[in-house]
Amino acid sequence: MQSFDVVIAGGGMVGLALACGLQGSGLRIAIVEEYPPTGTFHANDEHALRVSAINAASERLLTHLGVWQHITAMRASAYQGMEVRDQDSFGRIKFDATENGLTHLGHIIENHVIRQALWQQAESLPDVTIFTPVSLKNVAWGENEAFITLSDERMLTSRLVVGADGANSWLRQHADIPLTFWDYEHHALVATIRTEEPHQAVARQVFHGDGILAFLPLSDPHLCSIVWSLPAEAAQQRKAIDAVLFNRQLGVTFDMQLGQCELVSERQAIPLMGRYARNFAAHRLALLGDAAHTIHPLAGQGVNLGFMDVAELIGELSRLHRQGKDIGQYLYLGRFERRRKHSAAVMLAGMQGFRQLFDGNNPAKKLLRDIGLTFADHLPGVKSQLLRHAMGLNDLPDWLISQTSSVEKI
Image (cartoon, rainbow, N blue to C red; front, side):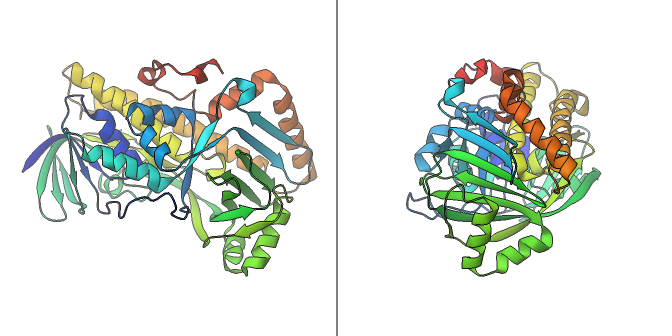
């Protein structure tokens, strides 16, 4: 039986980031992951369909973890602008990096690129042990430690178990933590698109009646990853139709902003659910990322929220260990839970309100949102706060704020 201080269930982006961040803290770390990365990245590989908009806060964390340069060396697309508008209306808001003295506002990065960089980093760390390809079979919660049985019957003990095992978290369910959830009744249709006009490193989003369409710029100036949030039936219909008709519908919905559109990948439709765990921590347990919360992708903040969970827990566990306190005691995990529940709740409520405001073509609602977007675009104080929020600068834990960065002047 092997003993650890922290056992992390899940070797995805969030779980790996926590393991890397705890290196050097004096804690012994283990990761349990059923599906390790396969293959290696090549620059001429086709772009994967699952991408994330990594904001400045997450970039700062990944830089601290020592993986940012490896990510950008593989493939990452910096974007210098953001545009949000209402279809067939005057309402729009634009953000520009140069106007704010910045080189970029964020990066569009394929999820598997981030995971591969973090996995390689974790494998090289002396304080981190990776168990793969295995999963958790059972966890028994003791007073002073948790007793873990893996699917291959190996046994571990740990002072703290961390659930970073995704939206359908086995660990959250095993710990009987209640979950509030709701169906957005939308699917996210994702694909890679070649555009006639170059995207100019601008992330664009348009709200149209019953849907939301985002074009996220990739490293090729004519390639974008799209995320098209649509009612489930409409998403399935657009997934199945002929590519020529799909291209036409896509271009019309996007008002031909980038000229003709051409589908260059398969299409996937992903059901969208909102989730919020009743507790983010318990006796010898902490939940991170999608295991604790999932939100609508319209603001692209899902993985960024998870990375800030990681940053907060890194700070708390390091502090508790330095002070000689029991890192698995729920009493001591309370500050982490309060801060991250608040951040997630604010984000969930904000996204829900934003989505409801932009849902449908009711003339009064349309006028209200168009006026709101226009005012926000022309009021410097409001616009700068919206940009700080989008870049994650209002959600940084104290220890990460202390790292100098030019983005703090926004």
